[in-house]
Image (cartoon, rainbow, N blue to C red; front, side, top):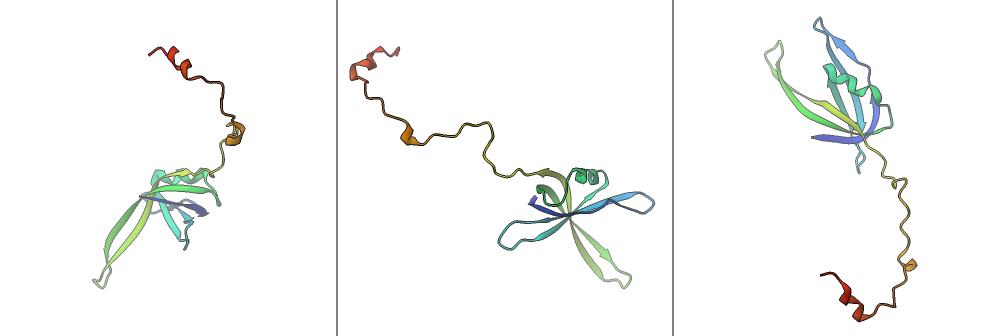
Length: 125
């Protein structure tokens, strides 16, 4: 699955517990009729993928949906969902390619009028 949009916020890397679990969050705002602010977390070595990204950039993030079950001290079962990113790439604005010559309008081409019907006999096949 993937999420596309503009980066609204890139958080700092957080480290938890004695085992050194690391997490970093990024919020992406989708560009649709009703924009959504989607928080995606990157964990462990994937936190470093966000180092080269900043607010305002257009990105595509490949994600996995994660779910887990937790039983609280009162014995009630609770369920939690998270969105984990595992790949991120910048999207380029849809601009015309530089270095490509402009396409001339069709009026600029004049039809060739000196072709003769019997000139077609010199084809090699």
